[in-house]
Length: 314
Image 1 (cartoon, rainbow, N blue to C red):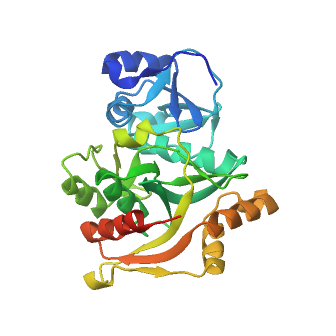
Image 2 (image 1 turned 90 degrees about the horizontal axis):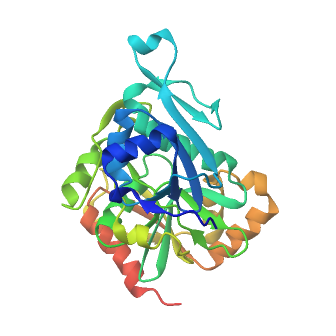
């Protein structure tokens, strides 16, 4: 554990944070330290809003991922400005439009963790918790897991992860990776209108994922960033406008099928082999597994999840 003094971004003005980012700002996000360097005013605006209550330091510390965001040096920068994402001084993506600089940062951090973190089982899933009851929501893009995570967080659930569930290989507990929730398309306005407490970036259009915006994490979630959770339920969400409101039900899934579905959503199951097999088996042994189809009625969905938290017994 570093002895370097940690500070909150909210304790400094935007201008001061701008100065720190020009050199390097060391952001604490879950179990990782991310070094960020950028002189972009556009990045600063979103970063200062969404990471307002996170801890950081300005002195050199052990860094898991070192990121530099800058405008492309090629002549196109004057006609079609682009952003370069550098990880450890290496370019890992093709340059993207400059207006997408904040999503590029978020995508890049996810990419780095998903591809380089092999001391934990990394699963493409959201994770939330209430009353000590942890729920993991694995899902493919478009399944609605981020929208559900956002709605649950805004109704008092604790967020552990929106995108990447980190599972301890020895205990099968979930380690929080508390970062902004990525919302897409209609979900942006749905969540913006769902709660007066929702703080989002402006929507950025025409990205590789369509329109995207990011939701600020709740203070409750950040206050428990070091508290691991033993998962009690695994829920596979599926969003469809065609589903009738009376069909928003949790339907049990056999654990053998759940195992295959979760393993399929893991970034490094094939790398970890038997270690991942035993960790995932242990995780599912302690969980009930469900399919959950919903039609976007967030109040009804939150009610179903509240039932899981309120009726769970060891």
